[in-house]
Image 1: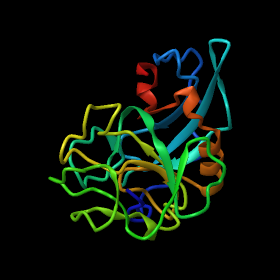
Image 2 (image 1 turned 135 degrees about the vertical axis):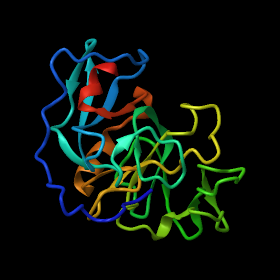
Image 3 (image 1 turned 60 degrees about the horizontal axis):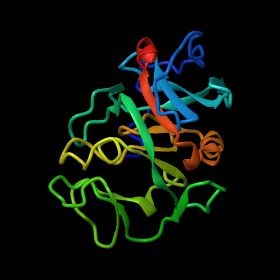
Amino acid sequence: MASGPALRSNEAKPGIAPSVPVGWRTTHPASTTQLVIVHAASSATTYATLETFNKVGGQWQPAFGAMTARVGEDGIGTKTKEGVPITPIGTFSFGPTMYGVSANPGVHYQWHHLVTNDWWDEMVGSPTYNTFQHGSDPGGASEALWKTVPAYDYFAVITYNMPPNVAEPVDGAGSGIFLHVATSGPTAGCVSLPAADLVKVLTWLDPARNPRIVITLDSGLRNF
């Protein structure tokens, strides 16, 4: 889902948080040689640090400098219900297709240029819940992807509540979790980056390297 309300009046914009700590370890498939790590200082903040890593010679090395990301209006945590603006903690893959209202910036994934009647089905009870659909409005909170600008100028799908993280979406457990363009505030559960940073990340990601994205608190980094 795209961005939610603007910055809370009592929430100061932080600087870039310290990098992933020395001695950090990860458990991922041997085929995973790219990682995106999104980590936040607390479960309540709407700001996070996004870091990128390449696996080289069996060691994880930074790909780019740390970036400031926005997360859900209600922070990050366990997401169990549609419509709750929490960015889910966990380890996820990226969907096989990237999307955008704008032209393909040069991604390694399949690219779908969004057109009229392209939707993300967020209708609880729908047989195609939490999937891309082209046609009539699926109903409920389904998103008109082609109208959501600039947030959906470019985005990657984070596989929360969808394969391969689950065999099939759990109805009503939450949908439409993307890595998309930042706007003026927190998101409705997605992770967002300024457009230039996002394009840098999206064009770096390569499905042949089985990339994963980890979303967690600073205190939970060592669990991933």
